[in-house]
Amino acid sequence: MKLAELLGTELPLVQSPMAGVQGSRLAIAVCGAGGLGSLPCAMLSPERIAEEIRAIRAATDRPFNLNFFCHATPRFDAARDARWRESLAAVHAEFGIDPASLGTGAGRNPFDATAAEIVESLRPRVVSFHFGLPEPALLARVKAAGAIVMGSATTVDEARWLESRGADVIIAQGLEAGGHRGHFLSDDLTEQLGLFALLPQVVAAVKRPVIAAGGIADAACVRAALALGASGVQAGTAFLRTPEADTGPLHRAALAGDEARHTALSNLFTGRPARGIVNRFLREHGPMSELVPEFPLATAASAPLRAAAERRGSGDFSALWSGQNASGARPVPAAEIIRALAAGLPG
Image (cartoon, rainbow, N blue to C red; front, side, top):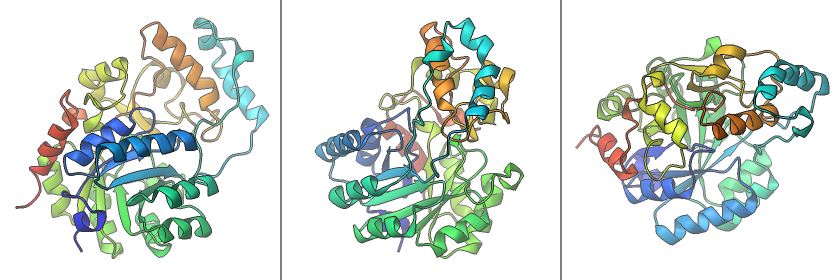
């Protein structure tokens, strides 16, 4: 079965779920253009997830994807958190942030029984997972609800792991990709590969359809991914400047400028490596730091700093998520991005 048939879409094109910079509007636009629109759920309450799904279904009867994180909830380490906050004391003072006002909340939720209930009651066509898969009992509930399950793999071992545990589609996430790395079997970043090295190895290792993700910006990228065995592609950065995305003005300006050519993996914002445009925060405190608390606890100290800087018109402490190839990110409707990518499909 071809990927589009499996997903129930017109085209084998998937919009990457991008927590914090999109909601239902982008998913609706992509679905309407023939691709698979995605709704990131890790930062949403159950009530908000239900609201967003209702909005999608009110606008289109086409399939969509719900995306969840599968990280383990970390135990709060007071000593580590104190060292992290101490390292940020000078910049917190610069922006008038009272350290006593900082919370300890996680900010991102792993897939749990409540999320499984949402899937069972609202029955999306596709459910995707980042950082592995949920525990077997929860995954069984997702599959029993009739959902196609997609999982992100950053290595061949992860692809095989996902297939052996029930994933229907493997997303091969190359090192070029923006946002959080999906690795889950190893934290060793030296094991991470660029897409065009990773993709053919994953295709050869598994029997499931493979979606190529990372640096997909135009029709030429799509053709290259398909030539290496991909059944479809996933694009994220290309949609960040569309009117349907919730990307902020500072982030949009950075994507449009020369600075978008310099990205790095950084754990400063959340505690887990994620690719974004290099700014002052990354230059002065990272981009990778051993002081940062476990994902997603780092957000408690970094998010207020971001907000304070942005109020002054600065993106120096913002998570300017972007892949290594921002050339496809244009200020045009999402449907136009889909058409540009679809030009690389055969026939």
